[in-house]
Image (cartoon, rainbow, N blue to C red; front, side, top):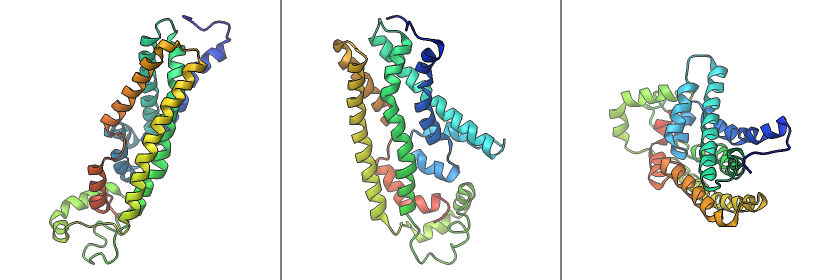
Length: 257
């Protein structure tokens, strides 16, 4: 089983082309947001991924070129992660070709890639949209960093820094729909951990379908658990402390309502 035999070039290549799927969703998640949405993404996903993609996204090479570079770097992060999983799978399945071990790992990991894309579209934006500025904002704040500066996170941040004493005078500003934001946060946690369970179940079915030796099932699932723990430790998912930070400071840090 050292190599795949009896397949033409394109079928053999498709084993690697399947890496495009997780690459696409990671690229879409980490590389498309502009600065103000990237701020919120940094709470849901590993900040190092967001910062790296954001660096290329903000290069002065034109809007669409920079967007492509950000997406491309995010896609490469996804592909490298899957290839790393393939190395671990190959380490367990010693008599398998690396390409086949990676393919099994990639097919299982596609579920996690799908989850990242869905969460960026649904939960991050929903939490943010729920935290509208409360009515009756003091007049001396309007136009300085709350309303007119909504279109630019960077501008809003600079003005916030410049007006720190002014902010302190008004204390903590809260959103007028904290309950909805809290509901979306809880829903994101339930969805994420339920999806992790689905990941392990689908991985088990893939092992059976691809005739993985039964003695190796447990070892491969331990690898899957380790990958999930690594993602969580890198900052995947909004913790309770991060949610509290977003709830109380989102309006100022976001540069608008």
